[in-house]
Image 1 (cartoon, rainbow, N blue to C red):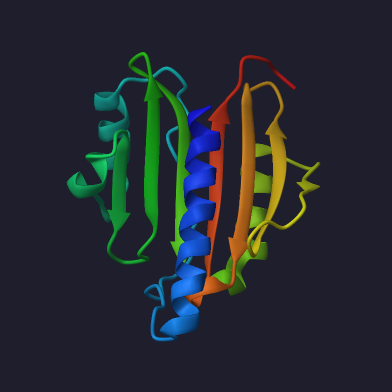
Image 2 (image 1 turned 180 degrees about the vertical axis):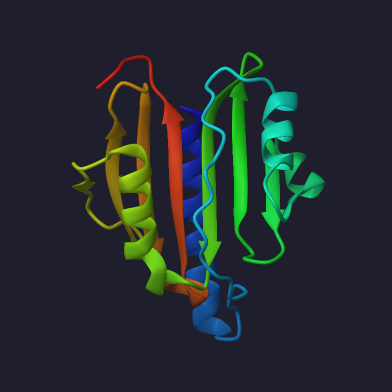
Length: 168
């Protein structure tokens, strides 16, 4: 449910920024770069375990301002990518990564995720508010995956991993 709320909030933000951009074309997210990062997908892990995992990845720093909303957030200064982690009852239930200004690398990101997690059956979804997205499943891992992109605000793309209660 929290993932649905996160996606809805993200879509509403995109709508709100789209209407602002029409009035102010100078609103553009910073241009970042793409590099494949493997997120912590140890479902049930506590916040300290996730912090330790991300701390072992070069260039990632915790973003305390965003954490006021709940969950854990990290930023990579080199690529401008952002990671977020959500917890329920003290255990990890979702992990997301967002990239800004590098949509030309979406096919590479999709391939990297497909290769790393053995996903070969992406389902393309109906675009919503300028966001194009696909769903996939990590077989035997109790994990649903959503990837997508939008060309708004200089472009952004994302990958979202969510714990499920069943295997595919």
